[in-house]
Image (cartoon, rainbow, N blue to C red; front, side, top):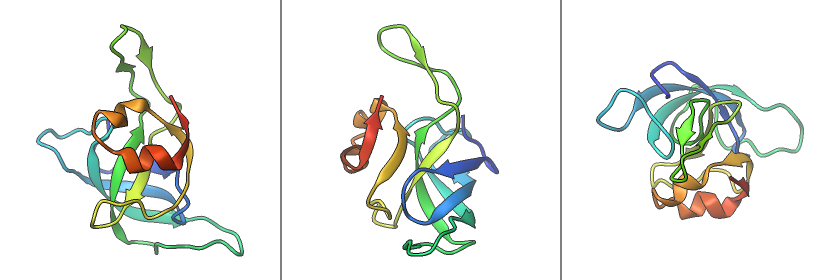
Length: 124
C-alpha cells in the first residue's frame, strides 16, 4: 500500500535512486500494483559514464512495480517483495529508462503495461 510521502526505490536506469510519492492517481488514497502515482526525485545514482535522464526535484509519473504488502494471487497463495519499487514514466506514459533491473510482478499484465514487462528481466 503506497500512500502520500512514501519513499520508493527506482528499479530502472533513468538515473534516479529514490523517489517520494506525492499523489496516488486513483479514486482511493492508497496505491497497489500497477497504479500510477506522481513522484518527486529525491536522490540520483552516482557514477561516471551513466546517463542521467532526470534531475533532482523533478516531477514524474511512476508505475508501482512491486510492494511490501502481501498480494493475493488467484491460486490462493500470497506473494510480497522486500521493498517498494517504482518505474519512472514520462508524460506519454512511456518508460524513461530502457532497462528494468528489479523484480516485477506479473499482475502488471492485467493492467496492460506490456512495455514495462518487456523491458524487465525478472517477472514473478
